[in-house]
Amino acid sequence: MKPAIVITGTGSAIPEVIVPNRDFMDRAFLDEEGNPFPHPNEIIIEKFQSITEIAERRYARPDQTSKDLGAIAGQKALADAGWDAEDIDLLIVAQNFGDIEFGARVMEQMPSIASRVKHEMGIENPHVVAFDVLAGCPGWIQGVLVAEAYLRGGLAKRALVIGCETLSRIIDVHDRDSMIFSDGAGAACFEIQEVHNGSGILGRAAVSYTKNEAYFLKSNPSNNPALPRSERLIKMKGRKIYEFAIRHVPDAMKAALDNAGVHLSDVKKIFMHQANAKLDHAVGERLYKLYGMEADLDAVMPMSIQWLGNSSVATVPTLFDMVRHESYQGHSVEKGDVVLFASVGAGMNINAFVYRM
Image 1 (cartoon, rainbow, N blue to C red):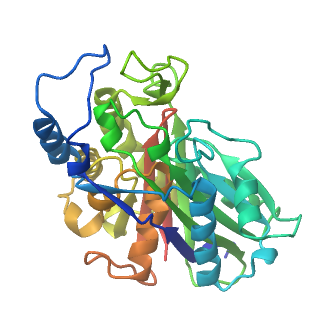
Image 2 (image 1 turned 180 degrees about the horizontal axis):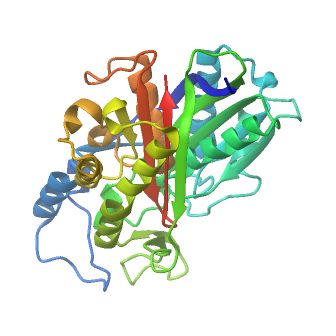
């Protein structure tokens, strides 16, 4: 029996500031040409919620940045695993925009967020190697795949993988898509174990589409032409991303299952990146169609986007942490359950891995 890469602990940081949809009623939403929409905000927000199912989202406190949320989630994961922070070998942080102070638009990337998180956690051991992974929303899963390579390659025995983001600091308040994004952090501890009970990572898949898809998500100036054109904010081509995701993500999820030698009928839960509810449901339905099966997504796919929004790299580990530690909205996981993790985002990147609890 080959060694297993096992999750020994999880943690998350859910920001305290609740922002309901009604807080956007007074926004001056503009199209890409800088023109106001013909419909009032009440209609815009109602349509937005019907598609995404987002009713509210969470923002970090003004005194917090990504590193702070990441450190909180990391400490919780270590405590859950019963590990001393000084004894880990690897600290990977998935993120996209660095640290952004409240009220600023400056994205600080040096030192890396992993270095900042390690500092915030008070880890002194220089042999705890810390670095960032930038892969769009799939960053946390990509960090897991990198950690697995380190662990299987003998370069580490214990790894902490964190996903943290404060997207509220880098949105365009004049863009309707700004209502999607939120803040948060999630983390998990991974360990290589020679003796195990069959738990661990069973298979994985990752792809990057960049020929025509590289700039479906990118940083651009505000839709408001009166604002500085040098400023760079999150922009996305929503329709193209939706069409891309439902076409390619189910295939990548199936590739991970095939790599694991697992049939979809054996999967207990699917932890999908919380992009928007319509997209996630469409991807789930198409995955089941690949197997000729009827999808009962309410039973297999827990969702958190309705009240947490899209916190990018943090959505998957946060959702997993909630389900793992409590009966979250009726969802739970038990020893021996097979679960599937998957994400899609800027790049365009898609990845997935299969895990037995």
